Length: 101
Image 1: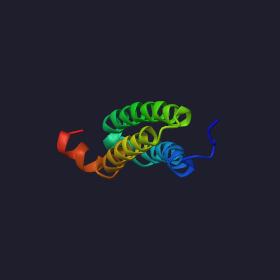
Image 2: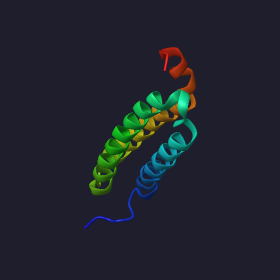
Image 3: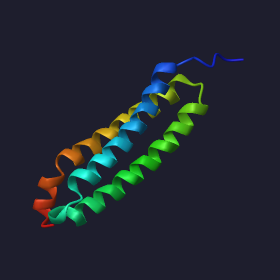
Image 4: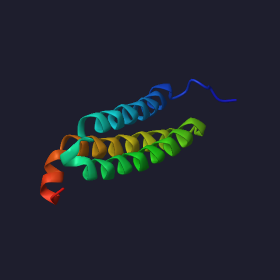
């Protein structure tokens, strides 16, 4: 029988990243879903939704795993995906102007 509290901090961080995805999606909707950027904001929200689905899968793998390397790998993948989504959020207006939306 393994300890259920083993690797609690990395598992908690992966679940917190999921919450940050939801907050970021709401912020994207309320800040960028306005007239000049509607088309671009829709595409970004779809990309964020796909990343959220990947995050939920990583949460499941992380929750069921007892292996340290798997837990740390899911933490790394989650942090990498979230940093990409976060940089897209901050550069959305610049990308939309560049692409002509």
